Image 1 (cartoon, helix red, strand yellow):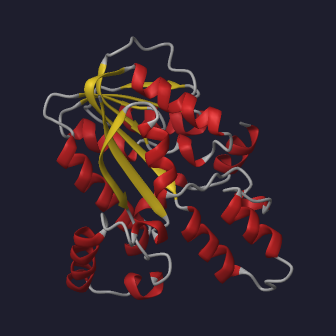
Image 2 (cartoon, one colour; image 1 turned 30 degrees about the vertical axis):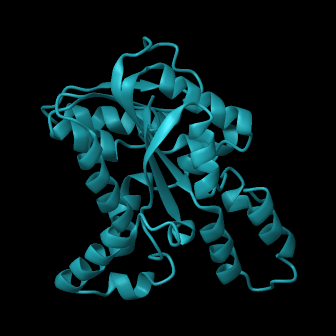
Length: 261
């Protein structure tokens, strides 16, 4: 947990999803699918809310939202934003591995948009999913974000100045799902079929598994220099292809959406 706190205490998570066109794609894609699957009147729990990007989006749409995060600084930022709004939202600070404060079968949708990024042990990832499903109503929606292992390998490959020196880091990224590079040591990288197996093992039925930002990380300079109209062309292409199973493994960020059976 200390690794995670140290990372985010020095990272500007608040602006990550809107700092340029390439980063915005993940957010635009995610809300596009949230709008598809979350029914009017739903009660929503966001267990890895970060600074509240999705929690506030959904609260502004009239949903009843409870939002939490393991990083105290993020929780304070959410509370500050709430103070400057007319919204009502329950905000808490807690580890996603322990949702005992919430009653079973009490939410229509649970968002797990960050915890799976940082759990290197399979038993911990299973625990988080189990906790999310416990508080989810029958036929409720679970939404889980993950970082793709294959795209992470490509990023490491592109950023390496000495591939022979970085060979161990590349191999660990691909085969273990994490590496020892200081900047990324707190992260775990999944792959699409792994997330599907994790959910299926706990009786979750897949609705969507998508690549939320596609290859934007590879062509970011091009995307960031597009005009507004040109950018709309790329967004349109992306939304038409982000569910394609032959493409999602090379999207840097993925999003699994399922239903509790």
